[in-house]
Image 1: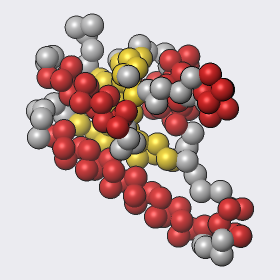
Image 2: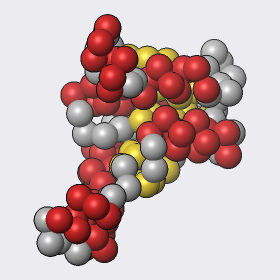
Image 3: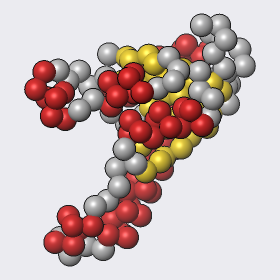
Image 4: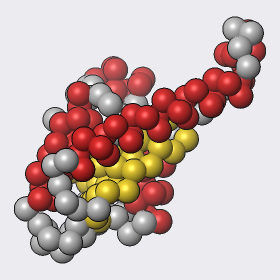
Amino acid sequence: MNHLQTILVAYDGSQESQKALDFTVEFANERKDVELHLVTVYQPVYTMAYTYANYPVEQASYELKERNEAIIQNAKTEISLKTDHPIIAKAIEGHPGNVLTHYASLNGIDLIVIGSRGLSGVKELFLGSVSHYVVQKAECPVLVIK
């Protein structure tokens, strides 16, 4: 694993993603010439839910984007104090699994680090698992942090 130069860490502000972020920074600091990609993915706002709530969809979409931009920028600020490696931070709208694997392919990511919510059985079947999806679909190695 010495050839790793670009590492993507999936981050959403949860405890699990914080563990993945902390691990990634430690891991990167043991290497030279590493570029960190910090990515958060948020689901699009669906019109029906906000139409009935009498809340403008555009406003809800804007607020969601702003909130996720703040989450990712705060995380970038936090880890920039712990590493000298370059950090690219992105908040992207879409389905998390699709976005993460697509982003990794487009940006030549060598390793994806993602936290696990620890779902199993029926919960995983109905709620799905982003980490499971990413492990199955990514073209590069994926490290799931528990």
